[in-house]
Length: 519
Image 1 (cartoon, rainbow, N blue to C red):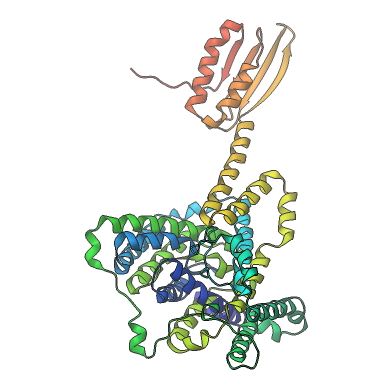
Image 2: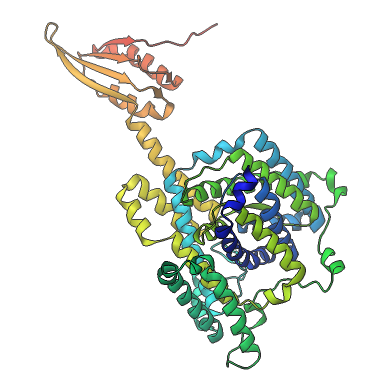
């Protein structure tokens, strides 16, 4: 049933998969370069993420592959273990851990991330894509494609790299990027509304082929511009099938007794799972049909993908937001798009690597800038602002933190702001206090009704309310609605009842269960 449904939207999935494929090639290579791993390991991870994870996953639009967020971990881990094959063993074990997490139903973690933080993550990544691609569009290609950290491996940061790029502009790259962006805007705003053929043939596909043609014209002197070798895609080219298979590497199983291998595997499994679950939530938010990805199945699929990737020499895999959002932006409807992009990666690595190496990075920069704009439209900022500070502050905190640190740190900072507002609500909503006058006895009565859940976070607000009750009055502490009261609050009520006698305050409790202290 699922396979038949996958082919139902092939007219949308096929063009979207080609766009994702073109975007994935330099990202896979760039992340491998940033990770200090063999370049082809990024392509292997892209193939496995597309085909293996694509088939096993329940995510209709998510695309998996090597992730920039793991690059630093990979780089330091290879150095710590002393060899690439030893690191591959860690990737395999990390996959087994993820598989176990899926069966243990750990996917529920995804639902703890607030919408404001997820939207902030998407917008932050959109802005980050634009900022990171500006240098590539200008022809300054010192930073590896796919790097999403503020501090770059080339010694620059996101903003200084843009400043430097304007000083070292390559006119040929600028020409390609400018024409490409103009085509994409025209395609998106005018041509797709004119005829169905422009919906079938996506603008990015035209942009890539135009980039190849212009690069060819540069090389043959038809246009008086040039592109350097680092301004185009650099896919390893195998001369024959035997040479192609030499690019695959087996793990070093002799390292099974090395404790460091297991430590790295645990770190990889945790970080990769968190990145995947964050991306799942974000992708589901972008899905026009608002489908919900089964998170436990996704963890199993990612685990399977990492086992296979590690066994054949690939980088660790997560679901990745740049490729997933490109898939959604350019019309993907089912997971067939992700699977096809993996198949195209495999076929191209076998057959047309030389042709792909004609693609200018400026063409791909133009495509990614459009993806970034769709993620970070100005209208979204207005919508979040209208929802109030509780939504807007975590949203903005996440964006700023992602731009100035990296993805996981940005999410963490956004979450802290979200938790602050949750605790603020909890502090305010611990109880309801109303007053009345007992005319017969001539005393003021304070009726404190505790909330259903009263945690230790509520201790301060309950204490403040009780401290403000004046002398010679009566207080009724009503626990009828409470299903759970923290021990700290119970202790507080007992202490208040004892101390109230000194202020001539009568204390009455309703359905208050005191702890049984056994000697």
